[in-house]
Amino acid sequence: MVNSAGPAADPTAGPTGGTALGGPGGDLHLELPDGPGGRRGALIRALRDAVRTGRLTPGTRLPPYRSLAADLGLARNTVADAYAELVAEGWLTARQGSGTRVAHRADPPRAEHLRRPTAPTPLRGPVHDLVQGTPDASCFPRTAWVAATRRALTAAPSEAFGPGDPRGRPELRHALADYLARARGVRTDPERIVVCGGFANALRLLGRVLEGTVAVESYGLGFHRGLLTEAGLRTVTLPIDEHGARVDLLPATGVSAALLTPAHQFPTGGPLHPGRRVALVDWARRSGALVLEDDYDGEFRYDRRPVGAVQSLDPERVVYLGTASKSLSPALRVGWMVLPGHLVDPVLEAKGERESWTSALEQLTLAEFIASGAYDRHVRRMRRHYRRRRDRLVAALAESAPHVRVTGIAAGLHAVLELPPGTERAVVRAAARRGLAVEGLGVYRYGEAAGVPGDGLVVGYGTPPEHAFAGALEALCGALPPADGVQ
Image 1: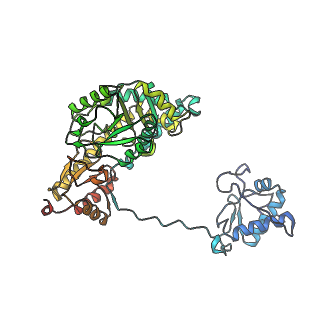
Image 2: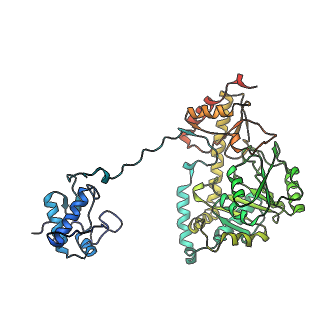
Image 3: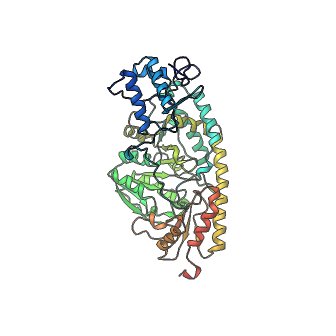
């Protein structure tokens, strides 16, 4: 006898009687054991065992009997009868329109090792986060990005969905050429722009075409210096002072490139002095070296006029490097290199025939985002947002710790708090006890760096979401040393 699980009414079927592949009631893996009862009995035992061991959990929807019959090479009535018997035994339930499901009263798994593993307990992290390096993730322009994606995909040529071009999508390279010329003073054309998967990817590629020794600033990301070392390059340290990198100390020979952050020295915060910008380019011309210009947060300027790119002084001696990590999100993994003409082919050769780092779909969307003006609107909105954050940080310190000097606040997404000598580690530990993640200035120091404060905090005021910013400031101020500790 066939009940509601039989051919007369297949409650596991959809409106057209088909299988909803990939969702509830989709594919089901079963191995039919040998034994009495033929194929019908083997199916009943396999389903019963799958429920008993917990592989099919209560509430799981089974495939339509027609689909399972086709998958297993059985007659439809065989599967329908098996479903019906298991319904009668209480292993399964069947209801018109709801399908056949594993009953909630079915026996629980008996073997502990067969139980479904529970989710691991998440590790507890800091309550507050003022570590530099990321924008406010809650401000990503989701609605505008989705709209740009829709427009970009609608207008994209069919070849955009092919293997790709190692230079990057032409739509993005044209949009970047126009934007960088207008907003950062960069002199280039689309054929000299190579899209990459972010700054680290760019530095790895450049490391394959450079030779010899690269000068790096005495404060910066050790990760970047490590990438150069991994590429087989030597690095030498270039001191910095209140006017930026000491480019006058660059040797006349023996250095093939200098990696600098001219617009906003990272992490100390000052721009490279105009006279040093000119001197830097003169050095590159005389020595035949390159300047690698890391413009990591060039869009965010508050109390002074934007500082244009050094690249504009000599496009044949400066490699301009930028990303969308600070302006939009590091999750996009989209960056760009504006290269001198003689470097384009070597970099493309190092990159390889197929674009393997940056999604062409994200490139198309970013191109549309820039061309439509949405990028400019987003940057202006975020500039106001981060300036308010910066002002709140300065005001909180003025009230709670007026003895602490704040520097590097005219631009960017972080500030440096100068600390009394010998107190940096203690302050970082005090912040951790208050649930605050923040880094000391020493994390970014290369060897013996002179001319800048020895102890300090690098405070990323762009990182927390808005609702958490006040708590982060309170924890920060509570961790700072008292006024009488200043020497």
